Amino acid sequence: MNPIPPSTEERLGATALFRSWADRFIGYLEDVRGLSPHTVRAYAGDLASFISWAEREGVDPASISHRELRSYLADLSRARYSETTINRHLSAIRSLYRWLVHEDIVKQDSAAAIASPKLPKTLPKTMSDADVSAILSSIDASDRVGLRDRAFLELLYASGARIAEMARLTVDDVDFAEAQVKLFGKGGKERIVPLYAHALGAVRAYLQQGRPQLASATKPTRAFFLSTRSNPMSTDALRTVFERRIRAAGKDAALTPHAMRHTFATELLGGGADLRTVQELLGHESLSTTQIYTHVSIDRLKDATRQAHPRSE
Image 1 (cartoon, rainbow, N blue to C red):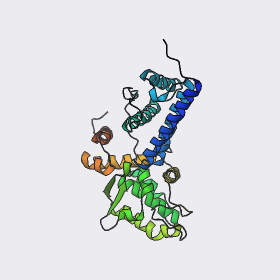
Image 2: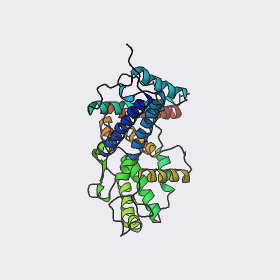
Image 3: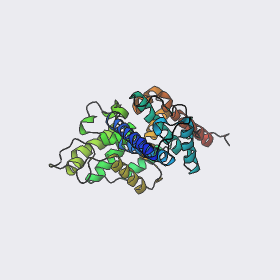
Image 4: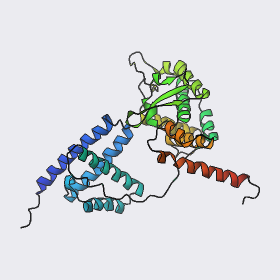
């Protein structure tokens, strides 16, 4: 005897329940793992797309099969999503199902066996030290906003921090006596990064001259970077500052704050720092994540050799 298929109402009820589980998972990413607002929004958007697809196709996501999951990925491919985007969707789905199993909400991790699309190997986009110097030099640090933006970019380059780590920075996190900054990375993990004198000078000028003009007695806060309305600056607000300063300096508009982090790592390796040290300074959990910068450094050495060696063609 064939089982009776679930009714439309039952399917919709199952989807609504799964959506509530996904909402709890998003809360976990935000409150427990401490992921940045940008990353949390990406997870939420990707999972919402998956659940909407399941609802349209009449699939119960709580008991989805491998074949049905592959069908979802195939639909993304037919919609001309890039392999990088498809991988991101799959990563979000995998994370959700792992959490559901861990929380004993579902018994089977349906996404564990799904293979990721193979991506072409791409090297991180970096700048030269001359590019960074040109961007910093283009900032007029004679007013409160210029002082703030100069300190922001100097800190990005000096510490290799993520943009979200800059948004979380407080005035207590910079230690002038020890010439270092305390950063809180993914999952709230703390690390200490030394700062050179030039960066400390820009930070000191901002804290002594710029920030007091941006602060408001009615909005007391220890946040390091403040807007012209005296509010702590979010990741998006700092990203906007970066993009505006890049354009003003006449540099590639496609550059992102993460390019400054890539440049920091590449310059350190090119200057002789060992891979483990760079891993610690960047806050990478895995050494393999840091190793990509060795390829960037090798490519730069090859370029320099081709340009400088007398027998190079």
